[in-house]
Length: 164
Image 1 (cartoon, helix red, strand yellow):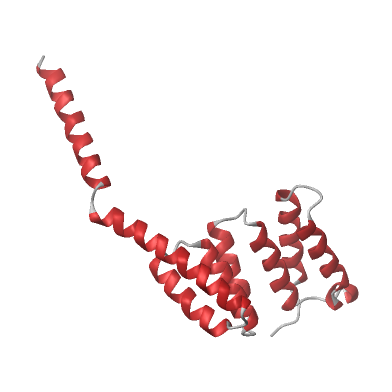
Image 2: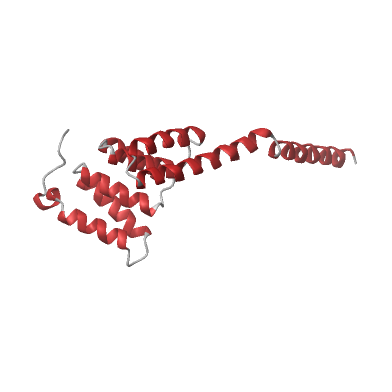
């Protein structure tokens, strides 16, 4: 009887602690920050569509401050950096987004495009390979990236990646 009372008491205490944690303000704040981050990414995408990359980048800084795990924010920030002609940073940010969410087909295409802009044919081909593996055939993104790789000057000359 004593053992079952002790087990019941432990289970009851654990259930109460779990309930308390799930109702804590920290959990609500976390959801609020995730929601804020998502809204800021949407606003940044609108800024990018209006060719306002610098403003989009500022919004994305805030989005990543609110939620550093927002994969989409990294990818869109990579797009903004690409428009601002910071190509290495663009590729790095898109890759961070893919580290968080490896199956993002749009990000894989953007990663391939960013790699091509840097004349990194090896990375572009890795992105294409992953895209082909994840995207159901026929996959327009994979086909377009493959064509871009085939038409790139570096692929035509088979020269190694330029050192910068």
